[in-house]
Length: 452
Image (cartoon, rainbow, N blue to C red; front, side, top):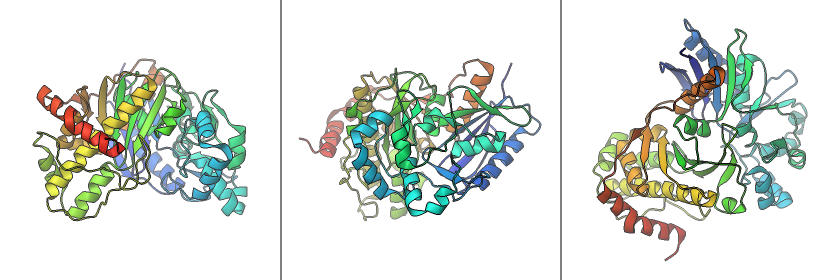
């Protein structure tokens, strides 16, 4: 029996709702307030359900984004996103009080101002009256669940991004909760379970953090497989056999936690300068994406021009806040500049994956890339060449995370494992692989690490 499911993805930029298996979809820029977000979700779900028997709905969303709700469960502020980061001073004090290594050992997270526990402390100290009125903190996926079912609950992979979950026992950490000052949180549901039902009886599944759901949808479900989630920023995601909380991972800028299936662990490395950096440079140079694809398509050897692609420091590996790249400077040869930038980003993605798998003790066997920039075939061919001879595939779709949430919900309600979305392999001739894997890779690695 064919299962028809909807997937909801609340992304940083866009809200998407997709129906599988036929691929019908709706999309709008993500609203900046909770009520508008909930209204848009209900409208899209109603539109895609019309004339259909919907068997399940899956929800995925960005992490570290939420809103305080009052006693009537009405929002007290706009959505506070991971990009806002109001609690810079509070994050410094949290690190001083708990220590970066100790915090990581509990939560698998590197301390930063984007964590909700820091935002709560900021609200408590700067908006005491509002904070006192807060009955519940709700993240983006919890708001969607409430819009569809009237109930609030939280997926494990979103709970672990709050900064207050002790990963080993999957329980709230009392000391960290006291620091944030907020313990009014939705209950955490186990992955791959039904979280609630709509008034018409449709099961609703919380699927987890959108980067991880996209990786699962792309078929990255076992150790040795690597997902490259490429958008404005880039995330490298590696499932592991179990939870790994080695401090060497923290020192290399890697976050760890549970995977969306709740059985595997996973590690995530991020580069905030990826598709967004390319877009900035194209704007500064007055060039288009079609021009860029033409520039990148003649493959050959990597650019002889060296670029360290870090406009605001490097997050991972070897975190370095001093690493900089001027995104606005004029250049004599825009084509060579953009080839050099894309090649550097491609080598950096390889570096993230190699360090991540090395520290996890995993043999990196293959990569699947997904996200908006995968539509630039020239860029993907260069990423494939830079991957060190490992198989590299591209999942070309507009709504990977939303479709993944639908697939996961279908698997939960039917009990039948769902096949991954179909990725297309990129073939690299051995001669090109040898060139990219030789002096160019070693030069990039030595210069960005300042060795040799």
